[in-house]
Length: 88
Image 1 (cartoon, rainbow, N blue to C red):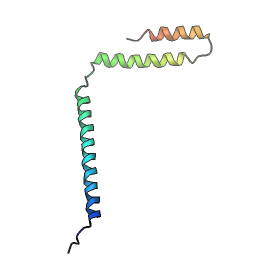
Image 2 (cartoon, rainbow, N blue to C red):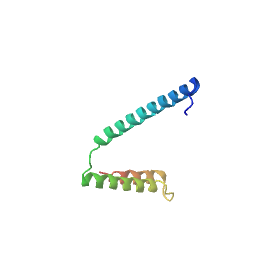
Image 3 (cartoon, helix red, strand yellow):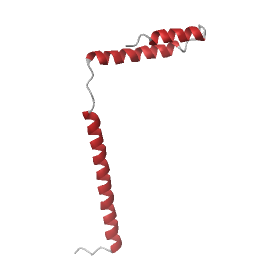
Image 4 (cartoon, helix red, strand yellow):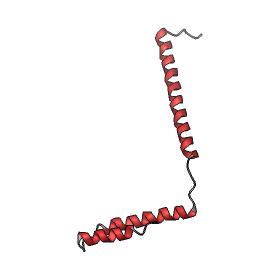
């Protein structure tokens, strides 16, 4: 035989159910937001992908040039500016 629940137990179960519904709604909102973001993504062309990759490599080279200590700071900065000018 199932024993009747107390009002405190009923309230606890109701609170758990309310929290579950709140969590479900939050997850649904997050999924909707992510679906919208994915829908708005534009596929890159091969050239866009190549240019983005190339620019990243050029920036990395410029950052390493700026770490050199064998030249004056003005010369190093000029090299870095020249290298960054190679970006597309």
